[in-house]
Length: 239
Length: 162
Image 1: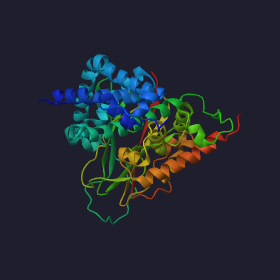
Image 2: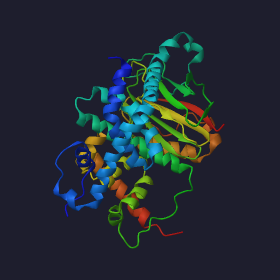
Image 3: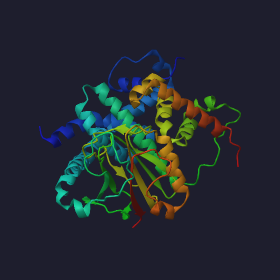
Image 4: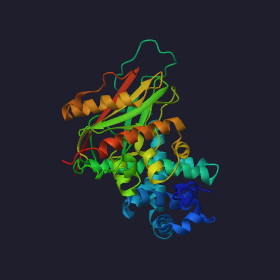
């Protein structure tokens, strides 16, 4: 028997196409193709109509978030979360403002800007806004009190990526909080050169292993080669 | 066409593939509904700009795979620690990975940076070049991730039962 059909081949067959000879003699591939067709049919007949309005609302919410920094501009002096970064005195690129990290939270349909240390709930949706202050490379990571560290942006999680150093940057998509309780800290690492994720992950894991109190009080990670580290803490609660 | 109409059109066109992908990854219809919404929201801009269906499908595979595997990992955090060894029965890691149920378990316990590549390669049957295209990285990077995953898998299957 030839090799099983790949995802790409099964997808093509689900829509149309001539089945390869392998399909006729392979129960596993037949079952996978049938499951694929069943799931797609279920979406069309049941899921689409039930969930479309929710999707439209969420995309509308994302658009509002992208406008939120402009609407809040007059209040920036008081409302922005400005964490003084470690900076070298002579940047190689032009600087526009001080690097900042802000967090916006959608809870029960209401979008607000969170303060550092805010209590958030499982299911809350988070969006971050980074003002790079002239630094062109960014990577975002988070670590929680269980010691679990992860890269939030970029999505492939391998190294920092280039952004417009002169403009506020909002990573695509939103993060949805899971049910793990306790403190969680996010780090926005800005640099002049791309840095690999491994060092950041290792530093975050070390911090997570040091316990919840260390997570609450540590704003910069040692050994991370960045010109600016911005940090934000929230406490995940269950109500 | 209004924005809502455009969203509805794209959700109708690509929603079935997104839902089926999430269903396969999560193995649960209700969870797949939620994940399909999240994936679509995350992929919307890319889908809106995709020049053709093939390009759109790449975004769907990439975003759904990354999101669902992260979701599985996140849920596993609340469960007991995965100390139970994978039953190797004298088989090598490569032989274990030929069994899809066991391969899924090994993949879910793998480091986050290699999980998507491993799932696309071992569960979805894509070759390393196709995985590189889906994930938007070089083939060499995929090769490195697969090698790292195999190293992890060998350690896992050689772990003695506790």
